[in-house]
Image (cartoon, rainbow, N blue to C red; front, side, top):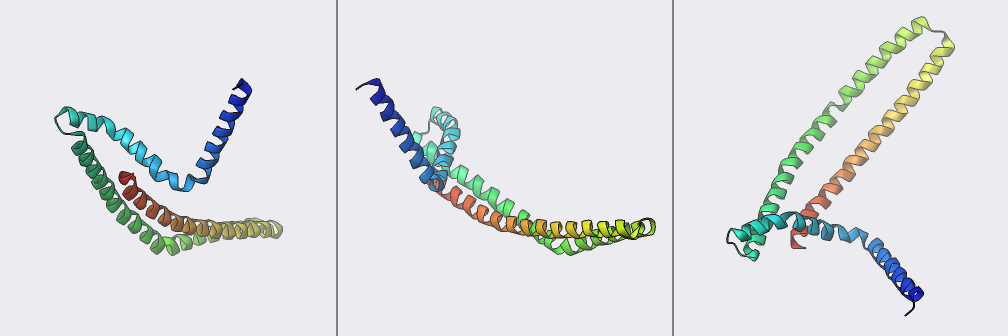
Length: 164
């Protein structure tokens, strides 16, 4: 086999590997996370083995401990975030009213000191800012929804990763 054929063979192989990774990217996360967790827990497993536990028992003990810690973390984190979101939604009208009142006071002061043409431009700027604020709120709610989906993905990842 010539050098050119070897080079072509390895380039085609590398391209096929890259294509395979690209096509499987959505399902590879649990496997990569499982390898990372195994890599990080391997020194602990070695230490438990030195203390007299079998490799299997050390692996099972660390897997159970990891699952318990992960589930505990999720169980502590979800109610905290949910409570904060509920308080944000409850307080949001008050925040909007406070901003509206503050901006209204600024407009009243400006009307007393500015000419009508400038006030028209200020109103246009405030109208644009209000539209932008509505856009931000829509993005925030969309982010919260996608965050909920991400949380479900995280929980499934925590369940699948130790199995992998």
